[in-house]
Image (cartoon, rainbow, N blue to C red; front, side):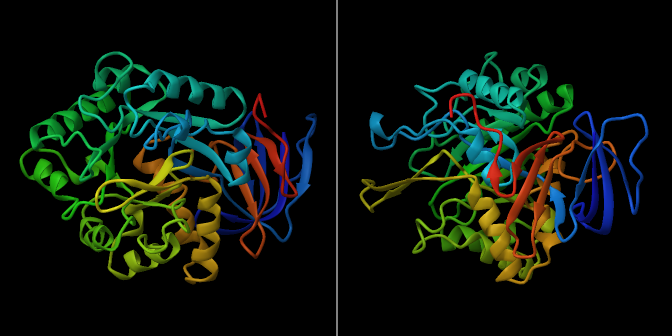
Length: 385
């Protein structure tokens, strides 16, 4: 057990100075003052001067590696546990991506299980860019309903030169299968959509919704800050459905992308509900740049630490309150993806706690009730690190 004293708690809403008791990987109690429980071995930690916030949730991570747009030598490596923790991230949602041909959903699932065994939390998306979607059981709905770690399907590509260009009927069918699988398995059952550079990028989703009984909340489009025209469209789309902002492609593509910290402010100013916005890193994914002829001219790789960087800069530079910024990386993600125990500091939730100083820098991190970062040093490394 651990008793955390004198923490300024953001749950993510501001809660004031509190004591937090944890045990068995859970938050057991929160109050203004608590005594050390008698008869138990309890570690007491004074968090005076620090803010305690929920561990960050990264909903789009290529945990088993990705890439390959430049050939076999450009395949990216798997996510290292230390990379996750140094970014303040305690929960990831793994996905495939461009390469649904030589990589498999099974490899993503096993990587998620590995992350869980090593002290963090992980779920996955089934599928990839391609349609038909690669799956584990042979069916999107079965994957979601039967496999505990699967929350939905994606990263399915539209409006992109690497997309399979699914028809409206195909997109409806995929979303409907995901929805039913989610209902049966008590999951989110939504579609994580890779948004490309094409003009009018949200049109496939608009058509799918208009021609079916599906709702906009059946989709989570990502990379909505990848260029100016998709970002402008997202100001309208975001008033009806969810939008995800990618953090790791900044500063690699400053001439094209809208900076995530700035994007959040502009979306809020445009009237997009904060509850409809999430941030994710796209970490371990390749970040390719193509010329007008479609030739690969640049290739970078994202890291989970980009989330923490953009959180800091949104608060300090864009002057958005911490409790607002936290939601796009904690409670919004947990609520949209129906992640049990995640996204909040409250009784009964998982003890994933990030400690920040007034400069919005990570000082300590607890995952499932155990220290994984102390005084800025990562304590819990991956098996082969």
